[in-house]
Image (cartoon, rainbow, N blue to C red; front, side, top):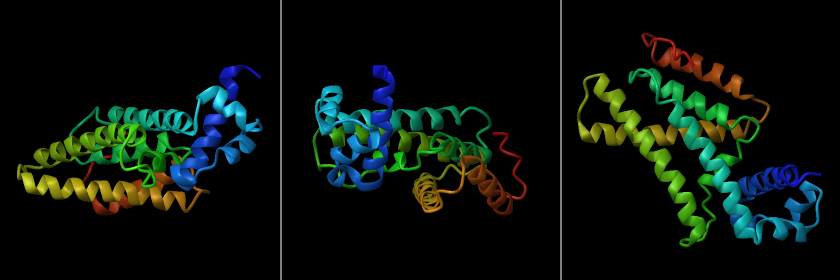
Length: 196
């Protein structure tokens, strides 16, 4: 098997193991078994459990950041929120567990693993805060504390939507998008379609 293909299999298995169990409880032996390789081969490819986790985290975090960034194009009205959540759903298609890699609560309190996760979290949070502030400004609300509260509500809603999806793995990204659009249409009946 070509090295790139084997590496992808290892990373897919590791992302699922760490996404489901967290860094602290994740097992490289389970990753090796899922990837159909020996445990020493993981260390040959990634040097250590930390190296494997960091590679998984960078792949997942970069994919999510790129998706959210791409959703920022277009009007700054309420449809920006819809475009963003739809982009998150598409980025997590068949890999909802990757969200948990970026927001892993079992990471050590400091060090390179926490630092790497923080980079992705901060960028996702920054994009969310900018988006929320622009949507509020578009609606005529320039109040800083309103933006702060709305940003926290946004973070909670996105995390809750991904957690719900994780409990309903039979749902595809397109199922989630259709479900979200129905709910969005009820909550914001005058909003134009998101166009995503």
